[in-house]
Each structure stands twice: as structure tokens, then as C-alpha cells.
Image 1 (cartoon, helix red, strand yellow):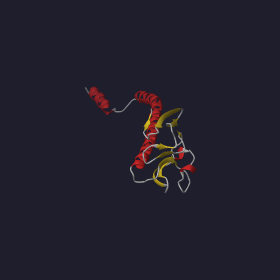
Image 2 (cartoon, rainbow, N blue to C red; image 1 turned 90 degrees about the horizontal axis):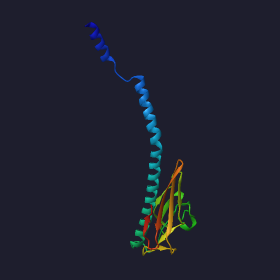
Image 3 (cartoon, rainbow, N blue to C red; image 1 turned 60 degrees about the horizontal axis):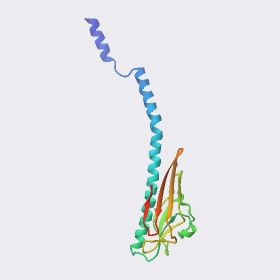
Length: 173
């Protein structure tokens, strides 16, 4: 009887994992991390592309609504940010990686701006998008196509945006 009591009391004191259980858990965790990390990078990349394209779409729509609001008789422009102290969009070129600004031409009053992007972001767009007080795009007779590419790791997520001559804009994919 004393042997059974000793055996039970020893068994009750033993707690925790065995070395084999711990090794199996670590192997399973390693497999899950190896499989999960690339998928998580794809989600991050896709979300960045969607976020940047939605921001740019919002800036274009804000510029158009400001142009038609009647607050200013001047044209409203979306263009890349540059170091020009006068905020002259014509001097800024078409390097959208430094961000963009929405401004009223004439006094060149900046209404909104967006700073530079992290590495791996590429925006291909014309030097500026100008809206008249009727909400139409000035300086073009065709659609303005904008592409936004976000590279993360070895893959790229792309979004396309179109601004129509009527001023309507949308994200195509």
C-alpha cells in the first residue's frame, strides 16, 4: 500500500511537457510560420496598393468637388509635391513618389497634401490633373490613366485609376 501511495504522490508532482512534446510543438510552429509569412506579405502589399489608390482617388475627388463648389473661380489642380516654394505644379515634373498636393491655381494655395511613400511604391501619372469650375478635366480630351504599383518582396500589386474628361474618376481594379 505504501508503494501505491508513493507512486501516486510522485505522479501528482510531475507537471509540464516532455522534451518530445516540446520538439513536436516547435516543428509545427515552424511549419506554420514558414507557410504563413509569404501569405501575410501578400496581404500587406495588397492593402498598401489599395490604400494608396484610395488616397489618390480621394484627392482627385476632393479637387473636383472644390472646383465646382464655387468657393474659388480659379482652377483646382492635383499634382506631385515638389520643392518649388511657389507650389507651381508646372515646375514639379511628374515624380509622384514624393507625394501629391491639391491646390488652387492663381494664389497657389495648397488645400491638401500627402508626403512621400515608402520604398517600393511607383505611380505613373501625368504631371497634373486640372479641374475647371464646371468639374471637367482641363488640358485633355481623353481619359487620364494612372497606375499604382506596390512591390514587396518578389511580387507586385497593381491598381489602375481612370479620370474621365467629365471629371468622374474611379479605380479600375
